[in-house]
Structure formats: C-alpha cells, structure tokens
Length: 170
Image (cartoon, rainbow, N blue to C red):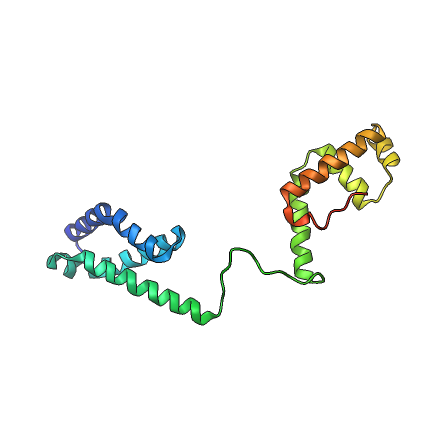
C-alpha cells in the first residue's frame, strides 16, 4: 500500500470505526470479542484497500467481513464443544483441583487481612491453638482474640465467598 492509500485508509478507519464497532458489538454481545472481530475485519480490509476505496463502497465490504468472521468464529466455538457459562460448574468435594483453587483463594484472602487478623486466623485454625494460648502469644486478652477471630472470619467470607461453606467457627 502506498502512502496516499495508507493515509486514506487511516482516515476511513478514524471516521468509521465507531459505527463499525457498534456493528461488531451487536454481532458478538461482548466488548472484547467485538474489538477482536473489528480488528480482524479492518486487517482484511487493509489488504484489499487499494482496490476497494476506488469502488467507493468499503463499508459494505467491511460489514460483509464482520458477518462472515462472526459466523466462522461461532462455528469454530460450536465445534470445539466448549460451553461458556456465567458460573463455573460445580465440582466434586474430593476434587484435588478444586482444593488447590480453594487453597490459592484462601492464601490471597489472607494476604488482604491485617497482620493481627491474619495472626489470629493462622494461630487459631492452622496451628489449632486454644484462645488462651493465642492471647498469651499476641499479648492481648481472650476477648480480643474472640472478637478478632469473628471479624477476621467475616472479612474472609467477604474476600473469598467460596470459603463461606468451608470456614467454621469454634
């Protein structure tokens, strides 16, 4: 593509990209997919630009590319056998993969607690220490340990909802 044709292509894209993006968004229903679809269509248009801009109707060609690409992607997705859902499927309770995911989620949630909250949770549930021992280690009262445990568990349930059924209070 020569300089003049490239400049005309860039002007066309700048002028028409919003309208073309709306079409792509309506075809896909998701912003990211629409961006990918439009990028593919504009790339294909760039290869044919020198012939198409002379005919005066690149919009029709781009729309045709958008429709055909969308159908192709839909067919590929359908043939792959993948089913996209809003929620992941339920997993077995003894699934090691699910336990790994839960462990990673818990580690991430623990990092978001304050130091004192994290210490109380680790000492109480990982080390399985009694409240009196935790109070002695942290230099506070048993009541403080109880209230910190309660607040920490509540915070963990917010940070990591999948733990709600797994975390038990003693």
